Image 1 (cartoon, one colour):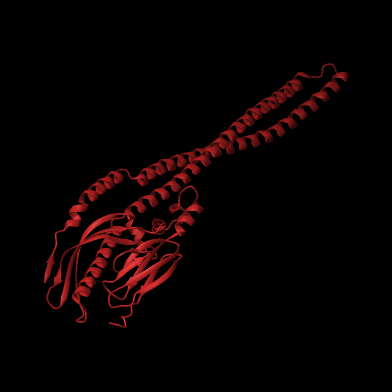
Image 2 (cartoon, one colour):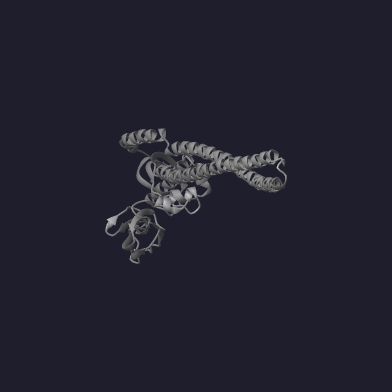
Length: 367
């Protein structure tokens, strides 16, 4: 027996998905990560240019210092030469007292030449010293500019990580309507309802796996995300489902064709884990500490049982049959799992973090 139903879910939800898709296209047209990458490239060029300028000015300063050292050595030599010329002139003056015809002009000229050379050296030293001061000032300014550019570069890299996290987080929260089919072999002890429930459950599981694989493949940074996937909770939920066709199809196999709306509700730090960056990038807000505390107040709780077609009630609200995946605040919650012919499971659970509640229903003694 095959049951047919119209794929109403897709028709009902298609306007939502079309507009969501259009909105997604508008977002992807301007990728903030690519824009930041361009700024980083420009900033790196500026840094390379300023490094070259710094090296050039540093080389120039070293040449000036070498010249200053040469002028200092020359100054010492010229001072010695001037002193010798003065000493020689003094001797000639002493001779002049005894011999009026003593030649003074030649010695005076040598002394004047040596004194002029000393003055020229002093002038060169002063000019060179001023050039060294100006070069050191330029070098200091370049160094300050270099430090500023490095800070701006570092800020851009930080912004890039934030943009990557934001982009991946948005991509992880995609929704989709998928059509999935699955064949399962039902036990001879199962009722038709149990067999149907098992078929629906396994078809949903296949839909979740298919959606998960598609979600990961479509990520902009799919390769790195898949490398860091271990331990990341994507929390894919079946929001709505619609049976298109179901029934037995030979060899005692039960066929289920389903249309389902699925959505990923990843944990708060999923994007950071997948990109292998600090969780602080996923906890942005007025205060990282407040956000961490806020995130810890909620947890993903899954309720599973060993029976099909049961009924789960949490805090008086019915959530249908297991498996049930919901987000609950930290604290105590009343969980009830019931099924005709079985004793009801009634427990108060304490939620401190993500957890799975496993339920084994016992047959009713009166049945």
